[in-house]
Amino acid sequence: MTIDVWMQHPTVRFSQHDMFDSLRRWTGQQALTDPLPIEFTLAAMDHADVGFGLLSAWHAPREGALISNDEVAEWVSAHPDRFAGLAAVDLAKPMHAVRELRRAISELGFKGLRVVPWLWEAAPTDRRYYPLYATCVELGVPFCTQVGHTGPLRPSETGRPIPYIDQVALDFPELTIVAGHIGYPWTEEMIAVARKHENVYIDTSAYTSRRIPNELVSYLKTRSGSRKVLFGTNYPMITPTAALDGLDELGLDEITCEQYLHSNAARVFSLD
Image 1 (cartoon, rainbow, N blue to C red):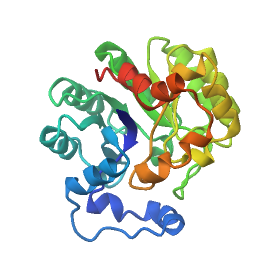
Image 2: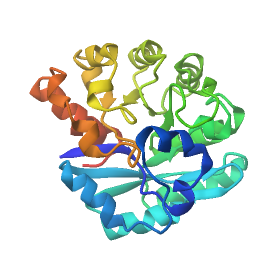
Image 3: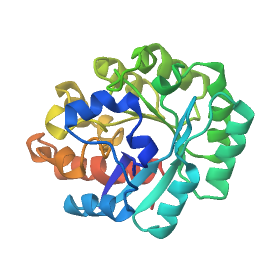
Image 4: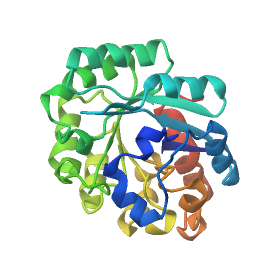
């Protein structure tokens, strides 16, 4: 069963945000004008035989919840065999953020926290993250984030794996970190950080199979890399069908492919 570790079921307010103008230009997608039923996302998953997805909530600095934790919880509750949730919090209010993270994990059953640094223009070493890292360790859930340049019209500096992810992993060696979007153009940096730190992982969201950089494909084929790379789409930007097209051209053996599509995510997010 293929697991997608980074996807969103878009709300109207998420879809219409002007920070995604560049993505709409690239993909030709239109912003929503009416709510999208969750069955639409399930159909996209079924078309590509993706059995399970981690749905992300989104919280923006000024607008607040673009996709709220409670909305995600409703979709998960309706289809618990297909979805699990990743929490979003208000980074500007550290104690409120910690309490909301605890609620999302303990009461809503979410599987981790996702904070997108470019959204906050705050690198992962910003002091406001550190109470959340400690809480993730205490609760035994991963911290998920974005690395690499930004497609949305925001600065890219916060996505550098070195020094940011490297430093966080040094400060919190017990913290599981899942770095999404590969890290391009700093892919080699991201691979180096994943090699260095036992609890740092990479997910391939926002990239189709044919666009995964050669250096990451080579890493995926190693004994270390086969345990450290997870499949993701960043749906709805990229559909599961588009993301998986060309997978058979990467030259992955059967065991590595199964780890990449399923076992690594199941282990990291405690899904089995």
